[in-house]
Structure formats: structure tokens, C-alpha cells
Image (cartoon, rainbow, N blue to C red):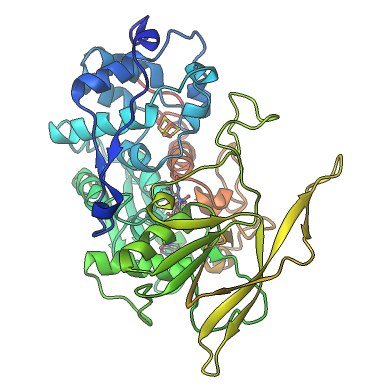
Length: 488
Ligand SMILES: Cc1cc2nc3c(=O)[nH]c(=O)nc-3n(C[C@H](O)[C@H](O)[C@H](O)COP(=O)(O)OP(=O)(O)OC[C@H]3O[C@@H](n4cnc5c(N)ncnc54)[C@H](O)[C@@H]3O)c2cc1C
Ligand code: SF4
């Protein structure tokens, strides 16, 4: 695969970024792609390693050495076909995936891994540029009608697969445009929204119907869907936000990240938003939570004109290298620094918020923290312990809570009498994505809990296979890793 001596000849080379001063002036993507020759060399670094662990590192089972080889040989159209045979939307994962495949790359044991994610992005962008991504409507339609609830990556993947099997697919989305967190969570500087729109155009031409502004469970009941459709696939995401139940958390200026980020994405898109305008302009901002959402709050606050941005993380600071006890090819918990972190945020680790302070009008003025340590006893989970005498007050006028999600909303599940797990996600086995109600399936964050785009696409594809099988008795829709290697 690739060039047999490629990994000895070429170093890893990543795309570069526009300078911070320039990029924070707007919300556009700011990556600068490698030249075609450089990309071929990156594909050439893929070794003939024998057992490509990257396949199992990727939740989609992407056929990584095969598309790397095609890129090395300049066969971009073939690379695009291989890539799309396992992944409906590589333009999303190529920009946003944390790339567990690269952590599992064999070359990564003692050298920088093959730059799989970036190669993936360039394959799909080349394919769009050359008009190779065309609608693939089914040649024969079945009589079956399927309702997909939710248009995030899980719903979109399930819809595209089921439509390709010939079924009549309607996607219900309560927001004004489809995309889920791709559109209303992830900021444009990580992925501009025309990237979603051009894919939706292909899907509409394939015959998928999108009904936006329809809240299932409210505007139309789940029972009505059950009567009108042969099957329902629930892909509503894990939308219940974790709160911070400490004194003063109701102060004006303590805001959920998922009130702040979707509003800003709507502003960027020129769509009216509901509720009070939340702005970081001229404010001392503290972002509580160190994950993707926290990082997106940092980049957005900086672009809105915050005077300072501080980021709290309750976990200790990791090391940039793989920690002991988390060996290759597993996903390591190490220090990850995003492009937003590099735009001017101060990061503070091992810190916990004790209370918020407000003025007489109830406006946030400061918060109080304490340092924490994690005590690990053999055989037990690490316990959080406050470090005495470390209380500190931080002046601030906007706090963004980016603490993750505790589960999914239950309106639709209640209307259908679906079983839930302890986190209110819908119970459906990974074996077949079936809920306890015949004909009703669940996939993505609403089934597995807060996760990743790559997992959502993977679950949408898997669920589509089992829905097709439920309706038709058998299915040709591929399961994980059952991609095609075209001869072109
Ligand atoms: C701010 C943020 C940044 C992130 N960044 C990354 C990242 O960089 N990389 C990554 O891999 N992952 C990231 N994630 C996680 C990733 O976005 C999710 O794991 C993924 O979007 C889940 O896909 P999904 O299709 O299951 O659900 P979602 O994307 O949440 O989509 C669910 C959709 O269902 C709709 N819906 C829900 N209930 C109903 C109903 N009753 N009727 C009609 N519509 C309904 C919702 O409006 C929504 O559009 C991020 C998450 C957040 C919040
Ligand atoms: S989808 Fe993610 S894990 Fe899979 S090959 Fe692409 S970057 Fe790697």
C-alpha cells in the first residue's frame, strides 16, 4: 500500500492555518491545503503493514490503506469511490473527526502517523470539485415509507442508505435547516455550512424529502408517524445539557454553551434567533469544560471580541505524548490543543467551580474556584478531592457552561412507550438497532449518548441495514467495513 519505502522518504506534513490575527476577524474556515504532490507523498507514507489497525480504529471501518494507495498513484476518483463505500459524508469527518484511526496507525508506533483525516478531506473535496459526487437515486422504488426523526449525521446517513435501498424516506427536523449539531453546534470556522448544503442538495436530488420546522412529539405525534410510516428511525441526538448546581448559577451571565453556540451560528447564517442576544463582546469570559464544545466557545468568544477568555477543566493536565498504561493502538487520554485554544485562551486544569457571585441586579460579577486532585485507590474509580486553602475568585461577566450532555429528550420515547437506559437514551441493541417497539429503531447520540460525528454516521448506516432487513427480510446495504474496491 502506498509506496513501499514512502514512510522512510517522507515526513508527515499537515495542512497549515491562516495566522491567528487574520482568522479571528471572521467565521470562515482557515486551513490552507497541501499541494497535490505533497498529498501524494502523504498517501505514500502508508506502509504495507500487514494488519491495518487503522481499519478497526475507525468506527466506520474506512478502507484506509486502499484510498491512501489510490492517492499516492494519483487515482483520485478511485480514492473517492473507496472512501464513499464506507462513509457517506467524508467532508464532515475529514474536517471534524478526532481521527482515532491515526492513533491506531502502525506507523504511529514510532513515527508520526499517516495523516489519514487530511487525506480523506482532500479526496472528497477533489471529488466535489471535479463533479464526481452526483445524486445516486435508486433504480427501483419499494412501497415502503420510512420516517427519520432528526437530521444530524446519524439521521442523514440512515436516510441516504435507506433511500438508496429504494425506500421512500422523509426526514423530520425541528430546526429551520437540516444538519443537527453539524449546523447549530459546530461553528463555521470549523466547518462552513455550505459544506452541509451541497451534500443536502445531492440527497434531495436522490429523492429524500426533508420536512424542517417539524417537532415530532409536538407538531406531529409519534403515534401519527407510526400510523403513516412502515418504520421510524429515531436520531434525535443527546440534547439534555449537564448543569452546574452550585450557588449563584442563576446569575445573569451564566449561560449554557448550547444557547450561545447555536445563536452565533444563526447570526453567521443571517437566520433570526429566539431569546436574548448573548454576546462575549468586551467581556471577561470563562468557559467551563475542556471538550470540543468548550473549545468552540473559546473560538466563538474570541471572534465576538471578548477581552479575555479563560478555560477551566476539572481533569488534570495531560501530557502531549501517549500516557503509560494506554498503549497503541488504543485511544489515549492526552493533552489535546485545538486551533481555538491557540487563539488566546488561558487554560486552567484541575479546577472546580464552587459558586457564582452577582451584583444587586443579579448580573454575574465573579466566580470562586478551588483546586482539585484525583485520588486513585487500587481497584476503585478515581475520587475528586478539593485541595484545602486554594479558593480563588475570578472576575468575569460571561460564563459559558460546556459540561456535556446527560442524555436525550423523552417526549417521543414516552409517546411510543420505548424503553430507555439509565441516562434516558433509547434502549436499542448494537446488534440490530431495534427498540422494544417493532418497526422503531434508534441510532446516533440518542442511542449511544453524547459521542462523535464518525460514530453517528456509523450508527446511521448500521441502523439502515437493519431497517431494510426488517422491511424486506434481507438487506444488501453494507455493514461496517463492507466497502467496495472499484477497478477504475
Ligand atoms: C458544540 C459541539 C461541538 C462538537 N464538535 C465535534 C467535533 O469537532 N467532532 C466530532 O466528531 N463531534 C463533535 N461533536 C459531537 C457531534 O456533533 C455529535 O456526536 C453528533 O452530531 C451526533 O449526531 P446525531 O445525528 O446523533 O445527533 P445531532 O447532531 O444532535 O442531531 C439530532 C437532530 O435531531 C433533531 N431533533 C431532536 N429531536 C427531534 C424531534 N423530536 N423532532 C424533530 N427533530 C428532532 C435536532 O434538532 C437535531 O437536529 C460536537 C458536539 C457539540 C455540541
Ligand atoms: S472517519 Fe475519522 S476515524 Fe475514520 S478514517 Fe476518517 S478520520 Fe479516521
